[in-house]
Amino acid sequence: MGSRAITWDRGDSPLWQVAGLLLRPLHLALAFPSVLYVLAMAVFLFRPPDLFSFYADRIAFGVLVFVVSLRAMALHEKIPLFAGLSVPMLGLATLAIFRALREPFDAQVWSIIASKFIVPFSLFHIAMFVFRGAQQRRHFEIFVVVVLAYLVFIALAFLLEARSLIWPRFILDESLGFHADRARGPFLQAVANGLSLNLLGILAFVLPRAYRRFVWILWALLPLAVLATMTRAVWISFALSTLALGVLFAERRMQTVCVLLLVGALLSGLAIGFSSHSLKKALWDRTEERGPVQARMAVYCGAWAMFKERPFTGWPAAHMYAELGRRMEGYHLRTFYVHNTYLALLIELGLPGLALYGILFFNLFRLSRRREPGEPGSIAALRKIWPVLLCVYLFNALFVDMAYQFVIGLLFTVGGMLCASENSAA
Image (cartoon, rainbow, N blue to C red; front, side):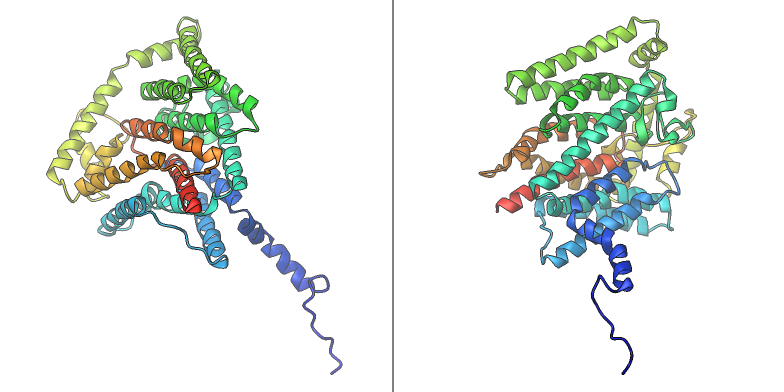
């Protein structure tokens, strides 16, 4: 015909070369879903609930779900379901969605529903599919160490009043979030930051094998980072979890590290308390302060009264906090939140929501007892400290409404890894 034949050889066709370049990121994501997973978690870290008009976390979540779903279809695999965990999580998400559908669309309400229920449900099941091999778990270990190092550094920069070293800069914005006078990290909330330091510290204690010296350095600095949160609940949970680690790990070296860590925390507090540093006054003020406790108790009383009025249906999402503020006459707070996960569930979803939450965590605790023969050492170590992680989370949930998708996602990622091991062994 005289016309040049079309060739499909990648080396000769510019079209193939362009298509190959465009599809290269997708190829890498399909080949290394665990890397994409931890990158999405990193995006969650820098997206607190109080940061509006910033949808990078939803984009990252959507990309993760798309890639993992595409990979599952390509490999003809199904993401496993565990009835004791999947059903109550799905029930909570369904109750929250139906509650929101009764009201006019509110982007903030749907964002909180995603952070508290939809994202954790999805991450739990995605983690079962992604973190099945040693290489994938190594990516998670690296992520844990890097994020712990970052949060410790930010907390120490706050403690030393080196504000120029704190990044991102929205952490210093007093108009966002809570506790601008404490080390609150990118969560914009001191309890959430302290809880993350605690959980990541426990994971770093048992997971990484190739970075032990660096992890020991982080653990030596961890008491100062926790102290910088200026939050009594965080101090208590950190001390108790460190004692629990010393009991669980019978190795003398591990017990010595835990004892030294507690002693270091005590000495750090005393050193600041008896110094002339400006933090001395802040530390003593936090240990003696009663005003926030009284305000929180008043919030609890108001929330409990709201629950008793609607014990089974909960309150509409659009009116719940306005109603709580109306009942808090005499308290001039910028915003009114329950600051308690369990009370928040009661006034949001009623008794059915709290019952599902209880069933979920009861079954999560049971994951520590299901040890399989020939289980990898990293998974066995996770099972050993899994009850400690859950107790730390549940204790801190008494003092904050867990709407922080990084914190919840971290916990349910570990749960998914434990279930992935069981499914692989089966």
